[in-house]
Length: 173
Image 1 (cartoon, rainbow, N blue to C red):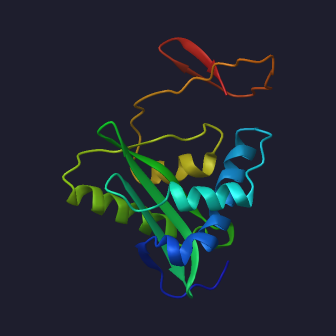
Image 2 (cartoon, one colour; image 1 turned 180 degrees about the vertical axis):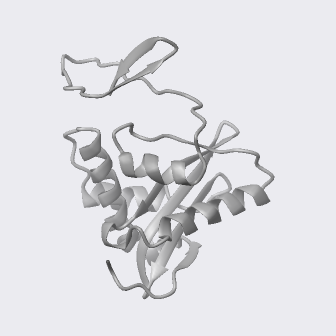
Image 3 (cartoon, rainbow, N blue to C red; image 1 turned 30 degrees about the vertical axis):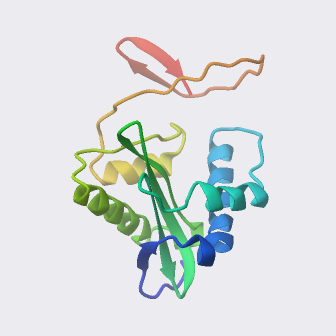
């Protein structure tokens, strides 16, 4: 466990934080790809481009960072799309997890969305991401709203070891 001082949750400032945040963004997307068994590598160039474009504070985009000892240790981003707020990413560096940082980020984004008079927001999770499932379940989130299905356009086969049954229909993941 890493020694943390006070955690500050602040708005992301691209001019000051883009380079440092891009390292975390790369880690996030690489871990998500590894969990989903995707072979695509998310490069630092990809991450830097994303942090400069996608993470910028706009009316329909909220990005918060968690800082400890003046270093970014986590981030969260929500985006409004077609009138619905989506939690796009939440990530805490591995050596700083289990210290309440993700909870602070999550609570702050909820607070901001409530202040905007929003009644709900949505998020997607890779079914094999047990850490994310456990985290969100611990936050009282247990309502399944939508299932995203993948349509393969190539002949690639996946070794799916898990399944879920919904309304008597079996799906693999």
